[in-house]
Every structure is written in C-alpha cells, then in structure tokens.
Amino acid sequence: MPTLVTRLRDDKHERPKLMARAKGVSVNNLIHEPATVALTNFEASVRFETRAARGSPSRALRFLDKPTARVETPRVRTPVRKRN
Image 1: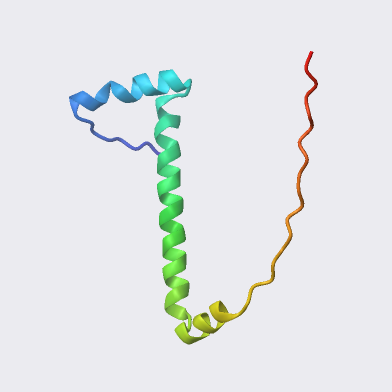
Image 2: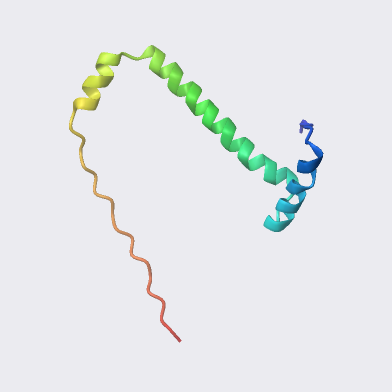
C-alpha cells in the first residue's frame, strides 16, 4: 500500500495523535475517513458535471415539470423495552 507523507506545522503535529487517542482509533484511520469523504464528493461532482455536459437542459426541465409519484415508505416499528 502506498504511503502519503504530509507536513504539519508544529502546533498541529500533536493534536491528531490526541484526537485519535480520544476516539480510540489510529491516526491513519482518523485521517483516512475525511480523505475518503472528500474523494467521494469530488468523484460524484465530476460524474454530475460529465452527465450534465452530455444532457439536454430542455429535457431536464421537462422532466422536472412532471409530477412525481408519491412512494409510501413502510413504517418500521421499534420494539418497546420493558422496564425492570
């Protein structure tokens, strides 16, 4: 697995260690999560822009003018806990 090296100022160097320790995760996992979110958001944006460039604005507006079908979502019953 490739390694990513980054530089942090002295005042930020110790804080990720403290935060990771408080959350009970490694510093690697602490950094991995927001990086994954940022990459996923970027990739979704690129996909959207690519599809929008191929699409037809007038067709999209016609689609948005159509009434939407209402889909009923089933209610999930949560079990009631008995008090002791």
